[in-house]
Length: 56
Image (tube, rainbow, N blue to C red; front, side, top):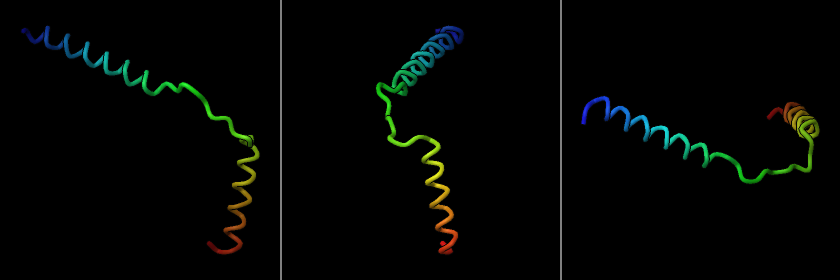
């Protein structure tokens, strides 16, 4: 097998592996939060303020 043939085979294997990795990472379902992003941010700000008051 020539270097060119080996390189071509390796490139094909890498391409196949990349496609498999992408397929595995694609979500099949999504999580829905009962809180909006703004509500979560507000609560995190509130907790941060509380921990500063306590000195944690």
